[in-house]
Length: 58
Image 1 (cartoon, one colour):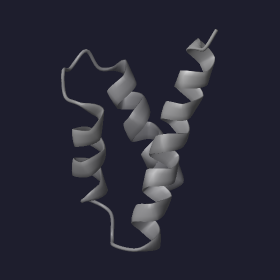
Image 2 (image 1 turned 180 degrees about the vertical axis):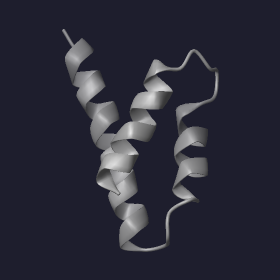
Image 3 (image 1 turned 120 degrees about the vertical axis):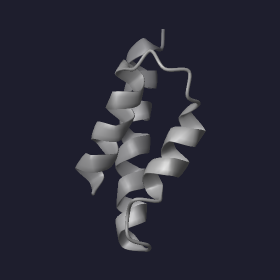
């Protein structure tokens, strides 16, 4: 599930779509079973976003 979250965030980052980040996370999260799977998905998603933010920081 962590890898799935990473992939979803990367797809959002690579997409020229104007879909807000929060919407992408909320919609994708619904496809995961409740509980630990959703937590793992969110962790992977946020990890990828954090990596990108750190890579562009001065």
